[in-house]
Length: 73
Image (cartoon, rainbow, N blue to C red; front, side):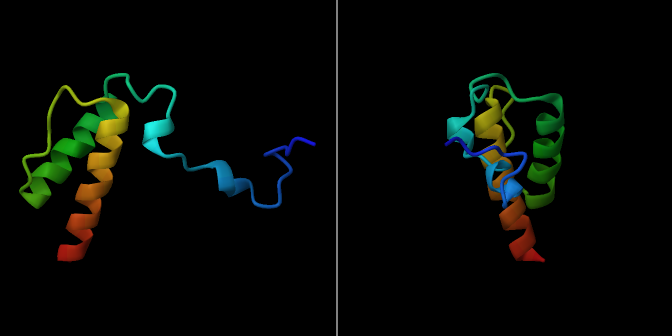
């Protein structure tokens, strides 16, 4: 029997997916990702912003920079 995510006991279990598994992960990063990545790069002093990143790559870099920023606090 298939599990229905609408009635599953833990509906949040499918809300996070590894960026490597995203169907649209190879598309160019979104404008929101680019803006946030640029901000995080400036805040952390990392030269992580590259305009040619894919959605999946940008997501992973954003996660890394957020972790680095939070560890400095």
